[in-house]
Every structure is written in structure tokens, then in C-alpha cells.
Image (tube, rainbow, N blue to C red; front, side):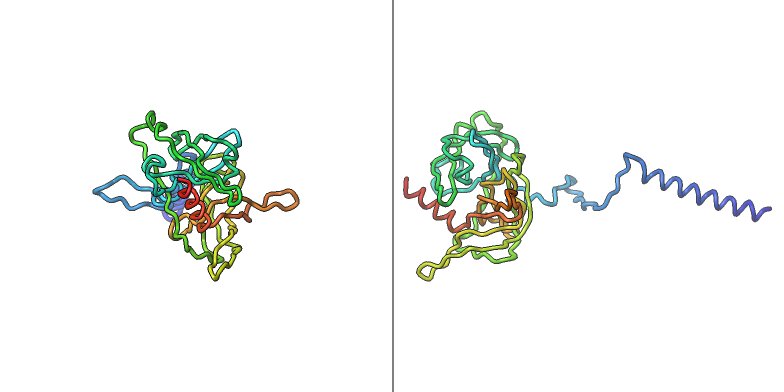
Length: 259
């Protein structure tokens, strides 16, 4: 009898442990911790582990709205400081702004400002927008305007190069997609090689037009998204065409010559 009671007692304890474990896992408010970020006791605020990606790729990307529709753009630094606030402007696709002279620009923190289209190139499908200084008069004092870094003009493209495409897919807030360079169309003139366009496998949807494509290793802008291919009337979202950095520099030079 004594041994039987001991066995029953052990079985009862095991059952209780199983039931308590099951209850803990199935509770709707239970949380499974997968990764615990190390906390510095001198700075207990846990920092987003992807903060650098946010600041260098996501924050400079803007949503552009006009009667022509909604697209994307990227804030860049320009040499001519009189051009805009803190010497910055917005690079986008020409078909995003079309014939509009002014457009609404939404920054990463939902601040909406007005921009003036100063130059378009329909051949390259690029446009440059000046940020009006007066737009910041009513903005919050703590607003930070992030700008992206352009890759060198002689940047070399390679197949399989990993990239991030950032844009306002379907007119929503900017979001990243990841892929690789899958095709490169080059031209050689006078022994100088230049890139006409390249394609990426990063998913591109309507609303991404004008958004930046970054080198995934350096976080530098290497192109602007301008088109996607069609097959039987359907968008092939993983075969997107991008204006390369050498043509972006040519476009910016053409603007400087107009000054």
C-alpha cells in the first residue's frame, strides 16, 4: 500500500507539472522570448538592432503625392546649398511628377511638406524636386531631415550583387524589399563603359517608382526604380528596371549647367 501511494503521488505530481506547463504555453497573453537583447546597465534603453538601416536607407525615402498619383523619392545632398534646406533635394522618377510643378512630400515621421519640381528628364525618367524652405516654418522644431549617400559615379555593377529597394508600395509608407542584381545592360563608348540600366529581383510594386535602390553592403544609392516588366498583362514584380548611378550623376550635372 505504501509503495502504491508513493507511485500515485509521483504520477499526480507529474500530471500537475504537465498541466501547468500546457496552461502556460496556451495562455493567450503568453509571450515566447526568442532573442533577448543585451542591455547596457549604463544605457538601459534597448536600441533597434536595425537602426543603422533605418537611418541610412528607410528614413531618406519619401512618399510623393500629386494629381498624377503617388510614388516614391529619396532625399539626397546637392552641392548648391541655395537649392533647398540644408543643401538637400529629392530625386525621383519623371513619370511620378509628370507635368506637375509642385508636389506633396511625406517624410518618414509623417510630416508633409511641399516641393517644387525644378528639372525633369523623360529620357532617363528622372526628376529633381526642391524642398521649399518655408515648408519647415510650421514643422516641429525637432524634425530631422535624413539624406541618402550616393554611390561613386564609377560604381561597378555585378550580377548577384545584393540590393535593397525602398519604396512606397501601393502608396503605403516606405518599406524595404531585398533581392539581387539579375541583369545589366551596358554600353561602351570610346572605351568608356557605362551602364544603361540594370534589373533587380527585389519585389517592386506600383508606388515604388522613383524609390532608391541601395547596395545592401554599403547602404549607398546605386539607382532609381523606374519600371517593371509585363507578361500577358501582368506585372512581373521581380523584374524591375533601375536607372544606374552614372546616369543619375549625368542628370544632376545637367541641372548644374542650367544654373
